[in-house]
Length: 522
Ligand SMILES: Cc1cc2nc3c(=O)[nH]c(=O)nc-3n(C[C@H](O)[C@H](O)[C@H](O)COP(=O)(O)OP(=O)(O)OC[C@H]3O[C@@H](n4cnc5c(N)ncnc54)[C@H](O)[C@@H]3O)c2cc1C
Image (cartoon, rainbow, N blue to C red):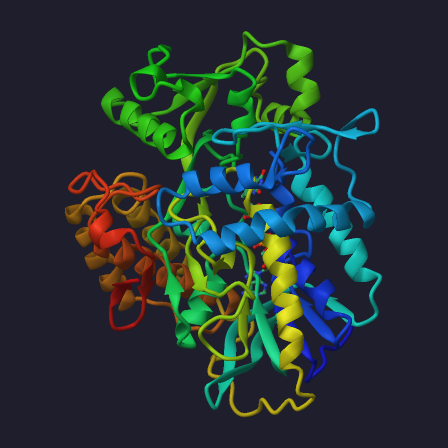
């Protein structure tokens, strides 16, 4: 394994779609160090199934993609950011194709499918349901071909190095528990989401809110944390991960049945199973609650669909479920909603700049406001590409050639030390968040969550190992979500409160900004 340099021009924390795309943009300007805390291939990007949205088909228009994005965001999409997303999108996708991404085609023509809340067929996919893996493969190949990019896996970023009010490096714990300080002209956080704040999530284990927690600790502004998207349909089996069962299955005709095997979605929305994600997730949560079962589930039924078509269109879903002894073409598939995507994050402008000089963010870690209160399906891979590239270009302006980060490391190294109690601590946070700050919230449940999270602060593990740092980051992210959810006295998008079930456009058609002092809306 190569020894890490002490100084580089740019640091990119994260090797998903946003981090890799930013690194490619940066490589023309200087040396780039890309860090991943596990294998380079372990990221949400790798698990993205459905596809990537882009207005490229003959029947589509950029203005329609913009309108659909704005509609999904429920009144608070940053329209400038959304315009950038849809306008830059086609060029970024063409670039991906030029770098070898194999999107599915019919003959020579790209095939586009439709997902909920899109008014046109505009979702590109690869190998049926392995879109993220194919995009990640092509970006990784491109980045590996550029001599200015050093890709380094199993390097855990524990904190940001801030000197004279400027981010100028990162503090790392290697796989062996060694500490390093690496300095740079600018740092990009592209650490993905925070699904592991909740006990049920579709996210991989690496999604522990590290970027948001590090930026918050360094004093950067954090925005819209109350908006967590819950995916309605994740496989629910004991001892199996909450594997995502793509929305596209319902698009192809799969239906939902409650514990009594009765279809129920038409009671909740005219579009039944194709209603917006938050509506479907709440309907499932309600059906589970009224079933009064100890371990409630609902079922996804696609037994009436053509077996060959399901196997060809969703090969990865079919194979993964089969590994858990569920044949989706003949069995009723037990499912529950699960935390899926964080709309909030490190507040950035259209160039990925955070409020802290020298610190940038892109992808799921960032909050440009592009998704508003609810993300339109398949817009997040595109966001990573578009805003990753923009952040990379903007960071080039920071190049000083002077890297001065030095001094002590605030984390306490304890290589090899056992993190006693850290797993129960994490599970407690996850359970609190699932039960009290999840799909359906109220003043009472959020107050209880807040109180319990504050009590847990006394048992916060020391930042002495990677896992302890993750536990602290999960706890910080949980507090930021809960504080923001308490402050937003309305329901909007993915944030639903039973005590304030309607919009309050006068006070809250705004973005929240959470700081150590308060939560403000602007
Ligand atoms: C199951 C699933 C299906 C999805 N399907 C779709 C879809 O079809 N279409 C779509 O548009 N979106 C989809 N999404 C969402 C989308 O995949 C993600 O939002 C997007 O890939 C995030 O990309 P990213 O680059 O921001 O982060 P990620 O791809 O999650 O990458 C994060 C990187 O940061 C690194 N990292 C994290 N913390 C640290 C640390 N402390 N130190 C060092 N490195 C760190 C990780 O190792 C990883 O390399 C899906 C998500 C999931 C979970």
